[in-house]
Length: 163
Image (cartoon, rainbow, N blue to C red; front, side, top):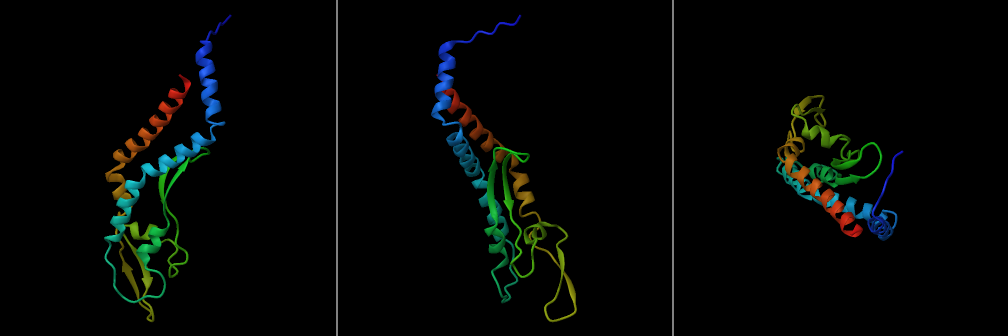
C-alpha cells in the first residue's frame, strides 16, 4: 500500500495560484510575450547584418530587396504543438520581383543564378552569405541564456504565488 501525504496549506496555496492565473491563459500569454522579447537582440543583429549587404544601386520597380526581406523577420514563441519553443523566422517574399525565396538565397554561400533583364544571359549573384545563420550561430549561447532566464522567471512567478 502506498500512502501519500501532503501539506494542506501548500496544496491550498497551489490551488490559489492556479486560480490567480485563470487556467493559465494570462501566464501563457505573458510567457510567450517575454520569449519574443528575449529574441529582440537577435532580431536587431540579423537586421543590421542584412542591411550591411551591398546594394547594386540600380533603379528597380518594386520594393527594395533588403527591406522586403526584413518585413518578414519575426520572433515567434510557441508553447504547444510539435514545434514548441522560441525562434526567429523570415517569411518568404513572393511579391518581390519574382524572388519568392529571397531570405534563403541571400543567406546561401553559393548565391543564385538569374537571367539578366532584357538579354538572354544568365549570371551568378551572391547576397550576404550567412547574414542569418552566422549571426545566430555566433551568439546562440547568449540567446539561449535569455530564453532560459524567461522560463526561470515564469517558474519563480508560479512558486511565489504558491507560498
